[in-house]
Image (cartoon, rainbow, N blue to C red; front, side):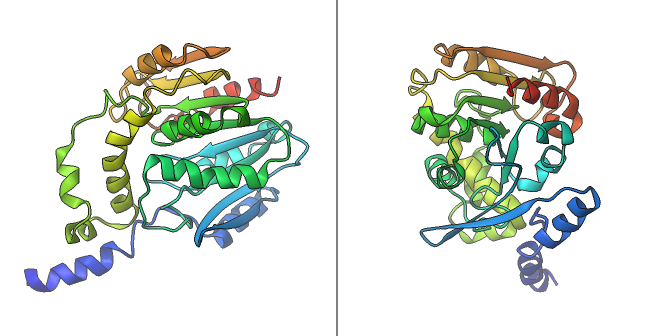
Length: 275
C-alpha cells in the first residue's frame, strides 16, 4: 500500500497548493466591486512574468511584491482600495516561480530582482515608483533598490526578512533541494522551500551594499512575529544610515500576516507617499 501511495502523493502534491487565482476568477471579483484591472504577461528570455495593474500612467506607482509562497492576489484588497486608487497607479506581481510567472522554478535573490526589474522598466512612465515587499518580498525590494537606486522613490518593508544574521538555521531544508525528494513537497511550497534555502546565503550579498540607498524607507513589523523576527528591523536601522527618512512602525501583538490583519495601518502609511 505504501508503494502505491507514493506515486499517488507525487501526482497529487504537484497539482495542488498552487496558491494562485486565475485571471477569470479575479476579473469576476473585481467586476463585482466595479474595479477595472488589467492582467498582464511579459516575456523575458522565455520566462513569463505575470502581474496586474490598475490606474492612470499619470500617477505615482505602488509596486507590490509578495512573500513566499504567494502570488499577486495577496494584495487584492490594496489593488481594489478606492482610497489608494485616488492617488496611485497600482501594480502587483506574481514573483518568478509563483502564480503564473514560470510557476515551480525557484530563483536566487539576484535573479528575482533582475527579472522583476524588467516589469519595472516596462511599466515605467516617468512617475515615482514606491516598492512594497512583504516577508521574502522585503529583501527583494532592497535588492531592486541596490541594483537601481535611481529608479525608486521609497521602500516599504512589511515584516521583511532582510538580515542574514537573523535567519533560522533550518538545515532540514537542504534535504528537499536539487534531488527527487523535493517533489514530496506540494505545489508552491516546494518553490518556497528552495528559494528560502537560497536566500539564507544570498542575503549576505546585500550586506555591504546599503550605503547607496538614500530614498525614504519604512519598516512595518509585528513584535510577535513568529516567522520573521522583529530583530530584522534593528538590522535595517543599522544598514539604512543614508536614508533621507527612516520610519519604523512596530505593531504591538502583531504576527507575520500584517498585510491582511492590519490593512488600516499599512493603508495609512501608503497614503502618506502621495505627498
